[in-house]
Length: 288
Image (cartoon, rainbow, N blue to C red; front, top):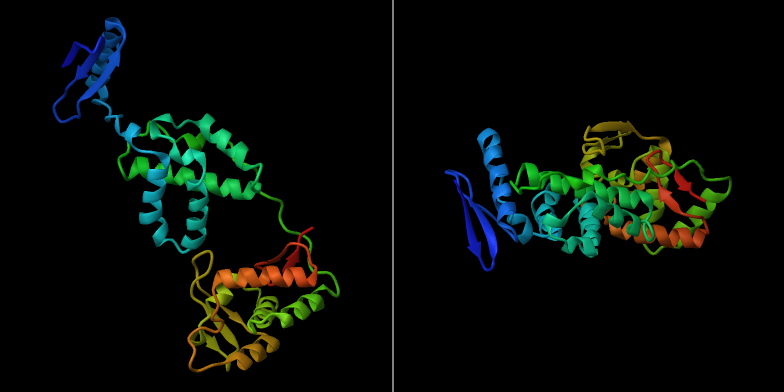
């Protein structure tokens, strides 16, 4: 089963077993080669031969990240956000590391370096994505990683929850800044958010077929938690949607997420509000 032979001035141990890939390793000393071969033979008697770990020397972390992006991320609802996160990780030095050289210490170094330039929440999400990438690689793609090194890495603590709300007069300043925008949809979106408590993604995906102005309800078929819901519309929200009603349009707010994000930054700058962000509770929070 095991063969020890001289190879290029060193000793090479070869192990062959029916139904398993050939394993080999080269040592300086013949005794070390024989010891390694005996160890694998003993393991083979109880668990079978391990996978051929040479595959780990031919693949980099970036290779499996790209495969994950092309086969897993593309089917997620939040694929645009994850693709952006993956592009950022692929630009990092760690993406060029061979799978055989991955270790918890390496990802700890990556975490500490990223925390110099990115927020703890951003780094936390990057590590979570990397952990799932390696989990899929081990469990579904048959890549013989001995363990998931990211699993043993301490994640940065979650950020503090947002607490500060708009003060008196700040909403007026916000609306005034919205009126200056060239895009006429910004002000209605802000007002709908405050009237309904809808998330940004939910508002931008509203279809007229889901709006019942007579019954004053709005159906949201796709929510963040995956469960559809129907919400009542206030008088003000009904009036806003009635003014926007267009029988020829499919979407109530035909606008991309990136376009709204850019407009939000301009509104924030004009209104002089600090760190303006849309919130699930229909408020526009101001974070100091």
